Length: 72
Length: 165
Image (cartoon, rainbow over all chains, first blue to last red; front, side, top):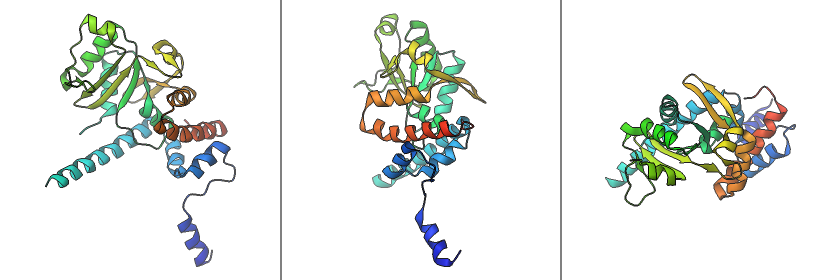
């Protein structure tokens, strides 16, 4: 792969697979990062819930930090 | 601010609450990649079941979060008979207990459209993907339509790849 092709690939982001169905393609075209959904679907439901909890904890912590920052 | 969905689910389970996980957390369990800030359940609105919910969150300073005066959760038989939904704030986060799900029905119908979800912290009933899609379609708010795009994609992918959970 030449350098330009590699850079192009790196810049392109998620590419909807050619065998994707219409609903998957529609979500993709709407702008969802379907690589996140693909990653979630490789997990068990329990792993998904735990991952969601970790991200939620982080977001709420950041939000709280932002509130403190704004009031200083 | 805290939202500990797993902690709330474990407490509900420990008290034997009859419930089905619906809403955003149900979407997460099905694979949706969106954050949700409360735990929605559909539950039987009997006196006994509401008392179980009360016991599950009793030490978490629960109050009716949507009431103007943030009324503490103190159930009476009369209140139990009249409540159709219970929107709570607790020390472990928001817990919304609904008596029915639009597009699916009351608790019995919701239960019929649920699947058992096994975890290391217990077994839970969650709405099936089809029923969750029906609920989002019926709700029809902007945020539901947003999630619907993902849910339909997930349904399609799961139909193509049967090994996916």
